[in-house]
Amino acid sequence: MRTSDLVGSAVANTFRSKTRTILTILAIFVGAFTLALTSGLGTGINRYIDDTVTSIGAEDVMTVTVTSDSPLGVSSGPTEYNPDAVASGQPGPPGATVVAITPDDLDTIAAIDGVLDVQPTKTISPDYVVAGDGTKFVASVGNLVAGQTLQLAEGAAPDDSSSELEVALPVSFVEPLGFADDAAAIGQAVTIAITDADRVQHLIEATVVGVVDTSIAAPTGASLVPNRALTDELYTTQSSGLAAAEQERYATASVWFDPDASDEEIAALKDRLADAGFTGTTVADQLGAFTTIIDAIVLVLNAFAVIALLAASFGIVNTLFMSVQERTREIGLMKAMGMGSGKVFGLFSLEAVFIGFLGSAIGVVLAILAGTGISSALSGALLADLPGLTLIAFDPLSIATIILVVMGIAFLAGTLPAARAAKADPVESLRYE
Image 1 (tube, helix red, strand yellow):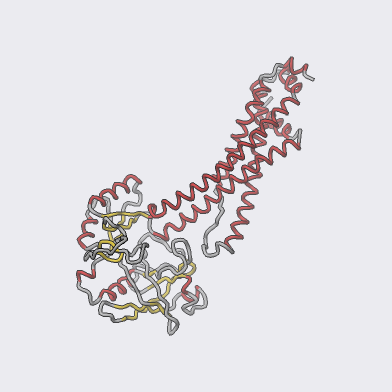
Image 2 (cartoon, rainbow, N blue to C red):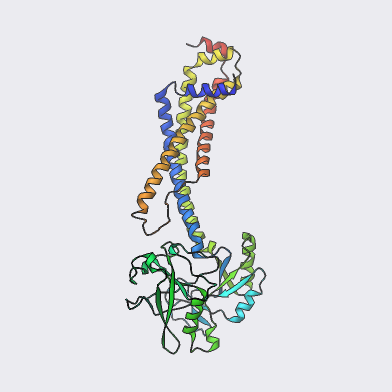
């Protein structure tokens, strides 16, 4: 019997007992459906995280602070005054401080092996932002690091190479500032008020070039994003009246390293920074714990799906054992006509694999339909504040892997009855009633 004939016979024999086969396929379907859906959940969330990484920071940039025994600068009691401390500028308890980075520190960091460039992070605290004579709103100012991208709802990111004062507004500021919609805000002027060290308030006008969409990295109420020219203008204005030594004190600095650096090389760079008294944190460090938790949850859900598949495999064993029992005389006839034990084993193994294929294929197809529908429904309701998030997404490679894994489980489940059929004695089988 040729291989094609063997496959054809296996497919035809699968549906000799339709009810039994369909029930077995349904058992496999439940496991494959669950596995595809949980895998899609992990793919969707991790893909969204990957897409928003560039909104948090560039992958070849790490944030550097001066290492301190009390990194957040807070304790249960009164905090001792430190003339070298400045506001941390990082998320944390109110009043948190870090040791300031000075121009000498920047020179030290720049001389460390593996550091391609270092730039101080300028902390700006404006009073308010307003469009025309409208309502004034309190706003913070963020920093756009080279290589960092913004998730834009409209317009473009501020151009760091431009001498024009440009700013991107958070989407939540568009209507309150009096603009009809995101598109209407592009090209319009807003005024940012900032107070210098002499308590004199200055008004700086900037052009809106983009509207930043809401995301994990930029939740509602996030910062204004200026270009470098506007950042320098705001920082210089804010620092006027201060002594020169006070102006050049920064909470953090951004360090650029080789984009192709391996994890070991990045770890070595952190060690060299630590030896010099600094702490480096990459975007991966900031997201590491979050992605680990997501992966752990998906792994647990996948474990339940695999248990369901293992339970379904017993259904395959039972189905094929009954098939071998019912076809004993047929097996004896095949072997009497010269069919080898290997081909008999292959025939029943192919039946098991085909049952696994049908159950897994139906499961993943229905999981894709259900996952797509659920994602679409949630994106317009519960997850409307997280544009760009497809909660359940499907990767073709993952889908193919699930189908192959289920077929592999089905093959293993079918080996026992297939081996029994292969070992059958043709004379005894032909006598079987």
